[in-house]
Length: 405
Ligand code: SAM
Ligand code: TMP
Ligand code: ZN
Image (spheres, rainbow, N blue to C red):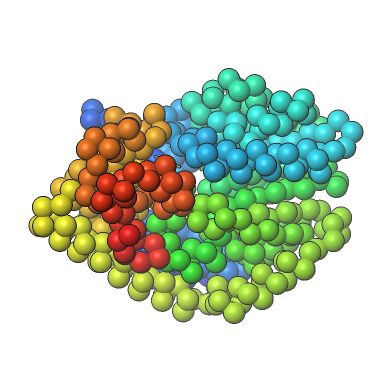
């Protein structure tokens, strides 16, 4: 029996994707085959309801010098973080000599607005190459893992933080108890710890099974985050649904009793209870849908190949590793994937070794069908690639189910 990483309760395993490579290990033709493999399986804690992976990938295998993901790759995300930075500057940071720490600052997309406003800040991120982009944008970065020990160092050097912000990162950290101890050491008495992450409610509702991959060790809900905050001596004070990444949630956590807990917290917890997010049956039903989607996708791609249609992948997301490797889709069905990230171009997708090409090649010539792996950026991509549809091209989507548009 696997025990919950948060509360030690029993974890009910609901899906096993089998052996999977590290999702962001875009290999070169020379290093192909060197990917680190692990068993990708997810379960739900029957005590605290936290959805989590069964097996943990060593952090150095995921986050290192060569980590390719860049927040700035999406115009929508750039705007999203800029807007939130301004909100912080006008709100939580409008105090005497404010100090903000970002966990998982990546290329500095969020902190550069803070830095430009002259506010004391520190980004913490272990991935050296992306951190260089942040430094070039004038952001102060500590190239390190945020955890208990590094947080204590920061507190000693820079003093307490008014805001500790983290987007799409805390869920990536299996040793989350250490993160919370670090937050406790670093956060000022009236400070807030703000977490943004993919929302479990949206994932279940949309059958977005590819959100399950190595980096997403936890899938958060309001109920599970509330229980986690409480367990680590803090309090979930507010939640705010966000449209980014196919449905996210912003959680504002504070020291107990320092903030009024908003009605939104209870409202969402009630809604989650109605949606069955605490019940194993919900996840076993979800598992059935996953199998159906994968079967339908392979059937569609095989039919299209037999009919002589061309298909290209769009967006070499980390998520796509789950779909491709679990479904056994290789270059015979999807000859290449277009992606705008320079560090992924010219590389091969983990496990399947499908080549990644620059987005500019998408139109040279347009394929008959494009399989949208970056479905969380659909609005931005469909607007950018309007001409593809106008030229008769069709998009293949597999969330919430397999369909062609
Ligand atoms: N916050 C950005 C965003 O939302 O676009 C980047 C998210 S990216 C998916 C996750 C980032 O977390 C990576 O840059 C990775 O290097 C970083 N990371 C992983 N473990 C970390 C840790 N323990 N402390 C700080 N950053 C970490
Ligand atoms: P994400 O789902 O983890 O945000 O990754 C999105 C991937 O999609 C990333 O590799 C960049 C790529 N992408 C494009 O190729 N073109 C685009 O217009 C956008 C928004 C993303
Ligand atoms: Zn638990």
